[in-house]
Image (cartoon, rainbow, N blue to C red):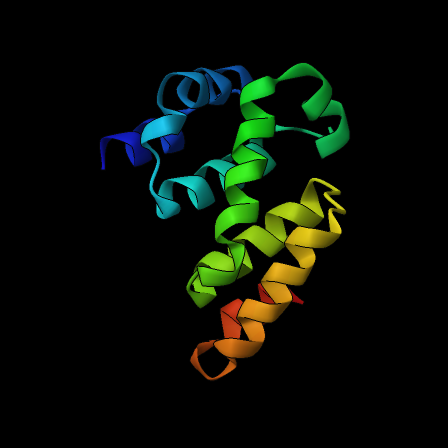
Length: 118
């Protein structure tokens, strides 16, 4: 809960990176999704490729996303898909894992989840 609050309170990408560098090892799956979503909101027009070159903790976050994408609940999957699209993250592995997880959980998707993941 404390980590979620810190992630949501970040007012700049630098603030978010500070939280990542201090707390990423303690993140649960929900924190990983919230961090990526916050990053998508705070990154302006920067893409994943430009962020990866500058922020090692961002690279570590993306690795955590790859590790949990298939197991996410529908809302988490849709949030990751939306964030990935906004950040122009074209990593085939994450797209594959999201698609595979979405197929497994298709009956659980609500209208908002479907709209965000498309």
